[in-house]
Length: 303
Image (cartoon, rainbow, N blue to C red; front, side):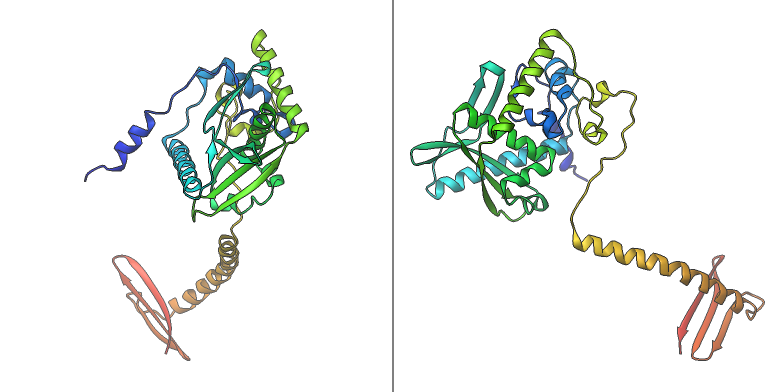
């Protein structure tokens, strides 16, 4: 058999590398902000221990690649619709706080260029993202808000746009992001604290939320003695939940069924022949019991 998938994964894996991190990246800083449930210690690891970072899998790299493809599709769709996106992948550097980043682009409205961030999402996540406040629900979407806030402060402007794409059906949704000054202060404070720790070679205290730690690429050096189990995932799927309801109902019924079946077969055994075979009629039911290949088969059928 020709191995088609293996070489593709092997080639994808070649792009997975550790790279030095000399700044606080706008796309990541949201994971470090304590006020957002982030880990400041991880931010320092990113700078001081980048060579010890746990590499992601080829499967995860494919997700990243797919996200890049989705972004290019959206940019082409916007261009075809006559909506110009300027300054695509413009490099940002906020030297005062050693923050860097690359913006997806900017949308012009009344001669003002507003930052645009394009995010493709799993359909179940997409369905939950209706307003800006919904970005606060998950760690990676909270990181999106920090990223956007940094770009707004760098310009500066008081508005930005998220353009979301449903990976399943291609549906698009735009969400306005008004400048959150509190979040801006948290971003700056987090960057300052990381810079200070990096300067003197120290680390902040560890957080206590092990659910956050499970997903950290530095967990093996930060918590080497902790054994993490499978990642806890929560999904909203009414049809799946209904199947589980039915399973639980059937499971409880099965115990009753199994007990009754044992009583029936035990009573029927008394009327089996010397070979253990049975051909019995009880009212409107027929019970047959045969042996084949050292196995016993008992069946009940309605006449």
